[in-house]
Length: 88
Image: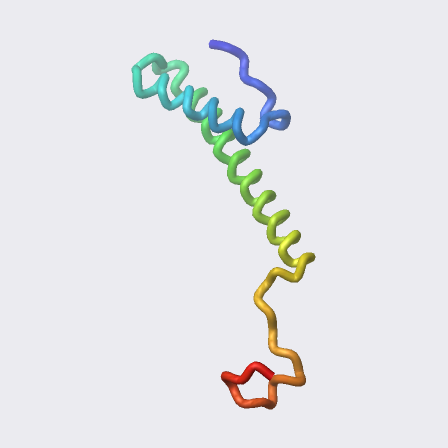
């Protein structure tokens, strides 16, 4: 068995590639029973890393949109009293 790369230093792409390698090995019966537990544990760590990276990316993207005022416009106090369906 090859030593695993440190999780904290991995990119999303590296993690997903390693997950794919583990899956292929399991599907091809290239993993013996003794290794299976280690592979499953490593997969769990990689999945958590990927989820964390996706959440961080989502948060960063949301922040950019919020800073750029790209969110849905809200009604101003001036237009609240006017009839709905009018522009001004």
